[in-house]
Image 1 (spheres, rainbow, N blue to C red):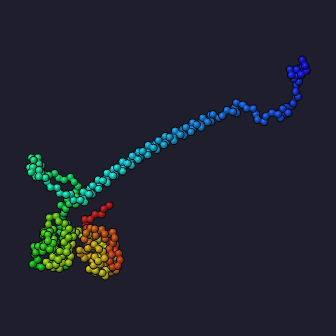
Image 2 (cartoon, rainbow, N blue to C red; image 1 turned 60 degrees about the horizontal axis):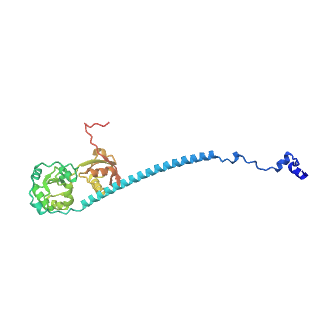
Length: 325
C-alpha cells in the first residue's frame, strides 16, 4: 500500500479545539424539538367550544324574538280586522239613520192573500212589554204636572171679576193654532197657570209658541209681566250687600247682570230689619228659579253693583232638626 492509500484508510486526527472555540462554530438557534413545533390544540378547542355555545345561545334568542314578532304581528292584524269591522258597522248604522228607507208597496199577490189562522191568533195575543232601554220618547210618558205647567206672572193685583178661563184658553189655542192648552188655573198670588194637554212638555210649547202666547195674554189677562215654565225654587244666601240698597234694586241688578238667573220674588234680609240698621252690609236671602241656575250661582257667584258676590246655599233649620255627626 502506498502512503496515500494508508491516509485514506486511517486518516490523521484533526486539530483539537476548546469548548469556547466549538461554541463559536455552533448555530445560534437551539435544535428543533417536538415540543416547540406542536400547536396549542387544547386552547383552540376550548375557544371553539365557547364560540359554539355563544352561537347556540344567540340562535335560541333569535328564535324567541322571531316567535314573539310573529305573535305580535298576528295580534295587530286581529285588532285591525276587529276595528275595521266595527267601523263598517258604524258606517252602516249611520247611513241607515241618515237615509230614509224607501216605502215598498205590496205586490198584487200579497194584497190578495188572506191572513192565515196563525196571523189572526198572533194579533189577538197581548203584546209583550218592550225590553229595549227607555229612550227620550218613552220618558215623555211620565211627565209631572210641573213639567206641563206654564206660569203667567202678574204684578200681584187681583184679577177682574169677569175673568173667564174658557176665554183665556180659547184665545191662546187660537193664537198658537193648536189645541195645546187644556186647563187654566189661578194661584193665590193672582198668577195664571196654563196646563198643557196630554203629555206635552211646557218647554216645547214655550220654545215654539212663546210669541203667540204673549200676544194672546196681552189681550185677555191684564197686568201680565212675564211668561215662564214652572220650576222648583231654591233659596241661597248672598253676603255683604249694602243695607242702603232696596230689594227691588238688588233684584233688578241680579237679573240684568247675570243672564239666566230669574228671581220669582223679592229678596229679604237674612236677619231682622232691626239688626240690619246698625250695619253697613248684611246678607240677604234670594229665591232662584231652576236647579241649573242655582248651581251656576253657587259655583260662580253673582255680579251686581259692579262687583262679584259670594253665594251660599240656604239651609232650613227647625225645632226638630238634628245635626249629622
